[in-house]
Image (spheres, rainbow, N blue to C red):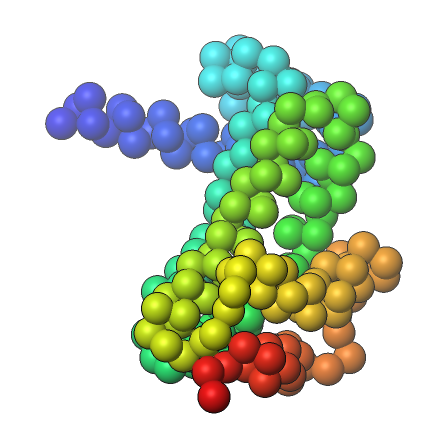
Length: 206
């Protein structure tokens, strides 16, 4: 039991370090974030920080890879919603659109892009993971609805790309152009309704 308590404390401390590091990397960038500053923000000694993460590069890599897993979780969960084609597609579309209007999602994409030359492998893994998590969720829903006879789709990846494209333009692209806090003029439910209706008009089984 004592060993278990120790492991929980260690995991809690690790999460505190990662949260502090993520906030600093997003606010000041990689180059201007020192390990000593991370240690102070996480309320640990520099020695403790290095015991968990032997270098700033390793800390940055873990922050990026774990962040993409965490922030895409609501999109993955949306795939589990039951219902007809419109219900399931709206569930996914709303989760996806919400993902790209979150400041942290936009900021992490911007940070990875800025540090791509320094961390090419991390950037490629991040972008591939994002494609797998987000695009894969859309393809999963579409494949289910094809199997149930509610959609007629020749290639699920193309159809998914069309659905995501209608949502990307007013969420991710807006964030890149206008800033992390910028929100679409129309509400997300209206944006998602329009995208799903357009998608169903094209692919819904007649």
